[in-house]
Length: 503
Image 1 (tube, helix red, strand yellow):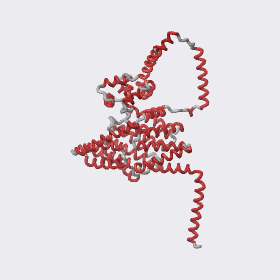
Image 2 (spheres, rainbow, N blue to C red; image 1 turned 90 degrees about the vertical axis):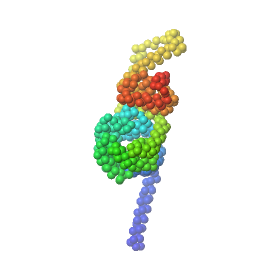
Image 3 (cartoon, one colour; image 1 turned 60 degrees about the vertical axis):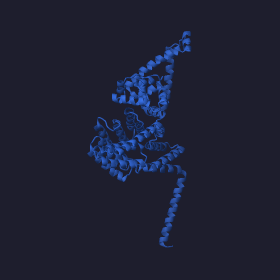
Image 4 (tube, rainbow, N blue to C red; image 1 turned 120 degrees about the vertical axis):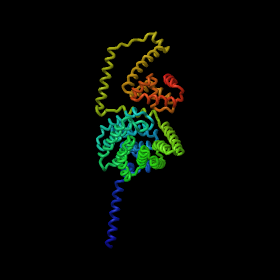
C-alpha cells in the first residue's frame, strides 16, 4: 500500500468515526438540533437582506413555533412569536401581528422576561402608530418600555432596547408631516440613540442592524430640521454599512431621505431620481407603508417642475395607496385584542416579591377579620313590603342605578382630568356596550375615534378635551370633523345627539 493510499484510507477511517460520533448523539436530540438550526437561520436575517428572505424567516419562525410547542420549550416559542410579529408587521398584516403580540406578551409576563416584554411592547406601539392612534396614547406604552428595560440585566440588550425607545419617544413628538415645534429635541433624542448603538459589542449580530436603524432615523429628522450637513454625514455612514450589509428596507428609507433633502434644496429632478429608485425597490418588496410615504413626495416634485401629468399620476397612486392602507387598518383593527394587550401591559404581576403561601394566608386572615367586623357592626335590616313592591315594579332598582351612574360619572370626570388613559379603561367598564354599538354602526371608526366619542358622551367641551388629552384646540376640532365625516353626519350637533343617546 502506497503512502498516498494510506493517507486516503486514514482520512476515510476518520470520516467514518466522526460520522458515527455525530449519529450517536443526534438521534436523541433531533428536535433540539432542529430548533437551534432554525434559530440560527432566523438570526442570520439580521445580517442579510430582510425583504429578500422575510418569507423564509416567517416559514422558519412558524416551524420553530410548532417544534417548540411539542417540547414545551417556552424560550423558543417566545423567540418565534417575536419574529412572526416582526415579519407580519412589516407586511402590514396588523390583525395577525396583534394576535402574535398578545400571545408573546402573556408568555413574556409569565416567564418574567422583561427584555422580550419590552421588545413586544415596542412593536405594539408601532402597530398602534400605523393604526392611526394619537401620540398621547402611544407615549404610555413607550414609558412602559422604559420601565421594563430597567429590569433587563444584559447590557447589550439594554442598549438595543434604549435605542428603539429613544427613537420612538422622539417620533411621538412629530405630526403626520414628521415635524414638530421643537425639532432640536427630536434630533437630540435620536443622536442619543445613535451614540447608544456604539456601545453594543462588535460581536453582537444585532449591532449593525440597530446602528443602521438609529442612523436612518437620525438622518431623516436632521433633513426635516434642515441640518443638511449632518443629515448627509449620517447618510454616508449608513451607505457604508449598507454596502457590507445590504437591506431593502433601509435602502428604500435612505433613498427617500436623500430625495427629501434634494427636494427641500429645490433640486427636484435629482429628488425624483432618488424617489423613483425607492419606488422600484418598494414595489418589488410590496412595502406598502413606504410607497404611501414616497408617492406624495414624488408627486410634489413633478408639480414643482411643471410636469403636472406625472404629478397627477403619482397623486392618484398616493390616493390608491392611502385607501389600501386604510383598508388594511380596518381589517387588522381588532378592538378585543387591543383591549386585552393593554390590560396585560398595564397590570404587571409581582407575585415573586411575596411568597405565594404567605399571600394566601394573608387573604384568609383578612377575610375572617372582615367577616367578624361586619357581622358585629351591621345588622341585617328586613326589606319592607313597600320596597319589595318598588323592586317588583322596577322603581327601586332604577333609582339606585341612576344614583350609581351619577357617582360613576363623577369618578370618570375626575379620572379624565388626572389620567386620560385610565379614564378610557374605566369608561369602557361603565359603558360596556358603547364601543360595540359605535363600531357596529360605524365600522370605519378606529379606537382613537371611539375614545374621543366617549369624551363627548361625558359632555366635555372642546377646550376641556384639548386639556385632558394634552392636544391643541385645532387638533381636537380636526378630530371631531374627521369623525363626523366618517359617520356621514351633516352637522356637529348630530354627533352629540347620537353619542348621548347610546346608553
